[in-house]
Image 1 (cartoon, helix red, strand yellow):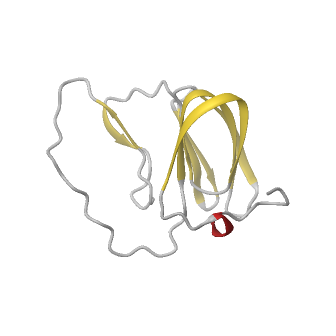
Image 2: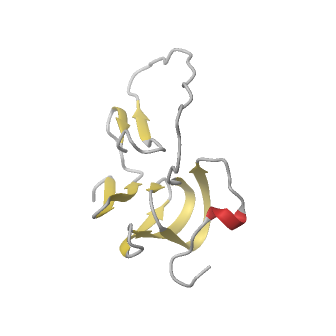
Amino acid sequence: MDDVIVYEDEQGIVGIVVKKEFDRPGITFLTPESFNLQLGFHIQETLREVSPHIHEPIKEAHDIPVQEIFYIIKGKIEVEFYGSDDSLVATAVITDGDTVLLCRGHAIRFLEPTKMIEIRQGPYQGRENDKRFIGAKP
């Protein structure tokens, strides 16, 4: 089993799953530089220091697609990845210690009691402007 699984449609990446077995030494960024959320993993074998710093603000940002990252602390979910034409591209089961980056449409099914962290960029646009549902299921 691969430790990183990339799901794509004809328009590009729809999701990335990083399994808990991921163990590439150093710093590995798994997303293209153009993504608004950069997913990187650090595995440092030796003591290392990063100098104090502040990231510069992004000057221009218009019509940025919202991406989300889920980290499963404990539990199990099933994720459906949807492509640019709203068609189902793939389904994956995500478990303890796994991370998933959602780049386009998606559905989530909790398969057992789950504790997870969700990260997505803001600002939050309010419930009425937050989502467009695929098909008839709200």
